Image 1 (cartoon, rainbow, N blue to C red):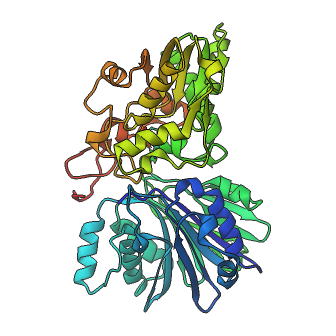
Image 2 (image 1 turned 45 degrees about the horizontal axis):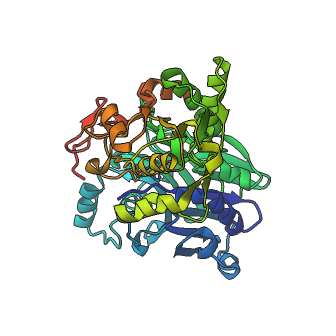
Image 3 (image 1 turned 60 degrees about the vertical axis):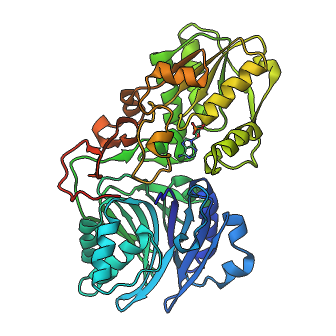
Length: 473
Ligand code: AMP
């Protein structure tokens, strides 16, 4: 299960939570387009609306009006290739003896299977095959004989893997980030309440102020009347394992994630790319949209170094075409790249071009674009990538394809260049990524570029000593 999602929770003083949650989900739409949902609580009972599709299609005004209560959580779910699975749409909601629970989860557990078996053996009945329901049942069991904070602490000791959660226990909204802080979560203040969200852009959308990131291993409990919050540090790990790919690709450029504005990080990554692998060409051109900030940093650093490169938009994006990787077959993916990006001939013809993108996964986008630019008359096409080669799958929640689909797995950079057909190819080193994110290398999860993971995953290496059970996936 790949769960690369957006989560949000709000507690307000005297106003329905549904509309702010709906706006926040709009701001987080890039984190998931498969389904959208909101659960609210009016002090007596839960109200829920969860549907497949984009936020704008999943709710109509009547749906919002029926979601009573000033506390609630929301979720957008990332598509998994080809499949549409209503049972996994979130927030997940369930009622237990210990009260009602709603959960919005971003991340991926590595021991969900074993926990599910254990809980099923104790009589818990499951309705989906998702990780989130496993967390819900574990929390429910702990809530039977412990207070909320202790119950969450116990669940945190049991579930292993990556999770940023917005949880609702009756009318109380909580935010929880896994002990290694793999997925982002932040806390913000509104005029009349508080908000927890995957990214600060969702807080901005509500005219709120970002207070700070939720710390790895921290539980935030919002007061149901919107007057404040409590913080509980439940664990204090030596190292974090923050996903570097949030800054490289996933998060919005206007979000601040773990204290670093994503746009600024991408520009610095672009500058690092010039420093490590710069090449003088007539034009520097981004692959829109994610390559833009990288290319502007790269071109700026090139010109500071005495170059005279032109930053040019040579590829126009059709914004109505979805993310190419969700197309189920390779053939469809290739066609989608051509539908999505079209060159502006005059900025390319007869010129040497540096094409800049954030990452290469399967290599579909790069191969197609290099061919396209050659076709419309580029003299040379040099490819520069703002992250290291992706050589291993992600078990922590980013849908990255399996190892045999990854173009760089088992190949040298020169071999990848040859397949893609570029005149030259340069990637960025892990050290430059850590520099640009103002983070120590050992506090970042770089499993997809090193094949070493912060959690024990059967058959994979771990890059640090963690006393966790080895679990197959
Ligand atoms: P590919 O065509 O498979 O090499 O994918 C690389 C392109 O997809 C780049 O332009 C990235 O911006 C984008 N990309 C990278 N990672 C992902 C992801 N997890 N989901 C969707 N798109 C991605």
